[in-house]
Amino acid sequence: MKKSLGIFFIVCALIYTQSAHAFKLHNPFSKKSRQEAEKMVQTKEEWEEKAKNVKLEEREIPNYQRPQDKDFKPKTPPSTKFAKYNVNAGEREVDISKLKNKLDFRSQGVFSPNFKYMAYGEYYYSPSYDSVSSDIYVQKLKSGTTRMQKALSATILNVKRSPAISSGTDGFTNHLFSTLTIVDFSKDSKKLLVKEKIGSSAEGIFRNYVWIYYMQGDETQWFPIKYTVLNETIKNSYARKTGLALNNYRWDIRILGFSKENPDLVLCEAIAWDTDKKEIFLGLWGLNSNDASVTLISEKPIPVQISANGIIVKEYLP
Image 1 (cartoon, helix red, strand yellow):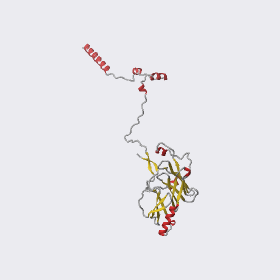
Image 2 (cartoon, rainbow, N blue to C red):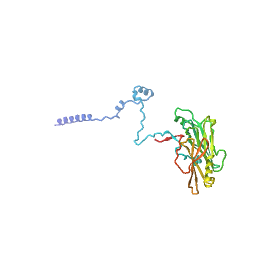
Image 3 (cartoon, rainbow, N blue to C red):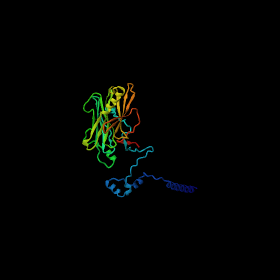
Image 4 (cartoon, one colour):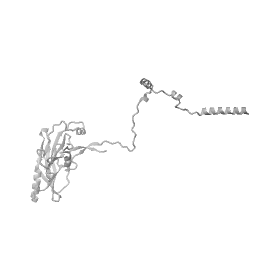
């Protein structure tokens, strides 16, 4: 009996030993595993030796891929295009409040239809006298392969400059503003139409004059003309009809531009204001740029066709 029990326990021990060996877990941190693992590089020479065995494709550094945001929308740069300058005829004005904050600024360049010339204005404010003066410049454009290249490369740097027309720059008068605004080029690019507005910051507008800068022949032969005849004709006409002197009232000339039907004719509207600041129409007038003759076209407001010849560069958002 005792012998049988001894044999039974021996058999059970053998079975347990085999089962334990079969389900024994592998410990990667054991001393034997550490010895079998690849040794860490210790020297520069060892690193260079190991690098010889690295495959070429494994040496390449992958490009950085920025994680994509599903709501991300790439910005498209604005497109640069040409636009007509005198689209809203007679509405161009100098922002005097902007000028007082900056003391001086330069207007955007206006290009002639044949892209030979660029005109721009410069405006100056004197805080001591509370006065505004201005200059108009005209310069020839350099040659370029395209019109856009000529326009974008236009610069005033290293260019000999002399004002084509000046207003209020010969002296300072308290609270006086003299602004020159480019109205438009003529269709043949030989004339630049400019309006001069003179007034007081305390009392309002005094006068508005028509200027034309003629660009025929060599640059040394260019010259400006101030057409005071338009103002005198309107005053005399109104005095004959009503017996009133316009100089005793606030009145203005709105210069619209060159007529589409007659390219030599400058169209203007004369307006005045009563004591209630109500606008009074004083007629639609035409100034002939060839012989300086003035004609009353209509005593009442009528639609007219104004040509838009000058060109500017504008940026359009996508």
